[in-house]
Amino acid sequence: MKVPLEPRKCPSSMLPLMDMIFLLLVVFIFMIVQTRPDFGVSVELPEIGKRYLDPVTDRKKAMVTLSMTADSQLYVNDHAVTESSLFNQVQHVAGGASAEDIRIILKGDRRLPYEEMLKVFTLLQRYGLNEIVFDVEPGEGG
Image (cartoon, rainbow, N blue to C red; front, top):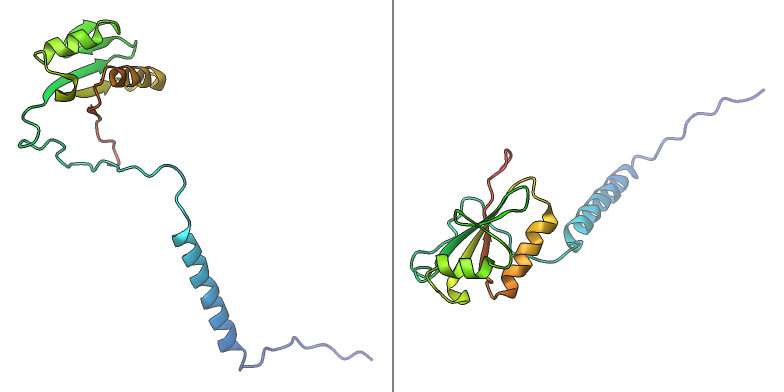
């Protein structure tokens, strides 16, 4: 005759120890998640709603708007330009200011391929125009 086996019961003195082990496990998991390194390059991200221009320090900067349409047409303010005449037109609109005294506001159509915008950005830097601000619209969630 077989005796039915009863399920083993954990001694009551072990329950607090098991609770403490699970609590430590959870704490260690949170510590690992919080201390993991961020992957990628550390960059200073812009804040939405923060005023970028300081009127005291930026009085001497000439502001030029460079727009790109979906078909990769360049416009300096409202004038259509080619890549070869881009720098001359930017300097003309800026009143003959040097490259260090010009700030470019770069606007691109949403349908514009990323490579085209990057090509113009690189071209501007080659001309010595290093103060480039991207003009974007806040999204639905922002």
